[in-house]
Image 1 (tube, one colour):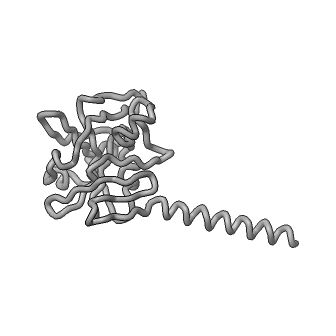
Image 2 (image 1 turned 90 degrees about the horizontal axis):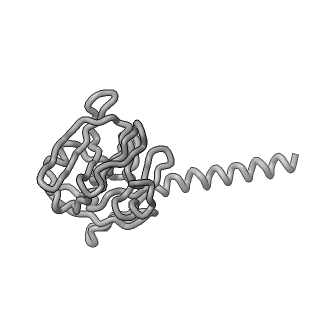
Image 3 (image 1 turned 30 degrees about the vertical axis):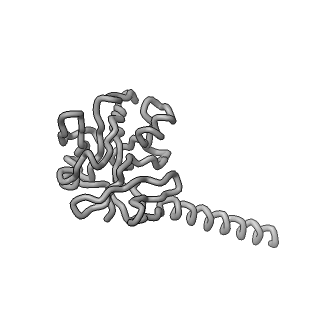
Length: 176
């Protein structure tokens, strides 16, 4: 009986620690005066524009289900941030932050967002494309059940396109 009690207490303590750690992993601290968002994985620069606060860097938060480093090279995660599938992109932003909509991107100044051409990852074959050519960001908007709206940015153009929700693209977050 005493052993069962000890095992039960150990399990309860482990579960409490695990769920608390998960909650804290999504919590970040925003500093308005420093224009930074400090999270467990790194401190991100932020920028204010058109009444919103944006991350001025791509998100680098690990998601075991749906995040990738360009070319499967961890150094590219440090350089470009991670690439996420649509569903993960819609839930990966820190508490109090959200994936921007197409309308948010339409109002944003891309120069202020420090856009890097980090490409994307195909879902069908796992290949990576467009490093150095374009930046691809998920918006919060779904086009239909299978496709989401992605922002594609090249040196001289920005477009909104519909892609499979399984493709992995970069994520920026905007303060709610």
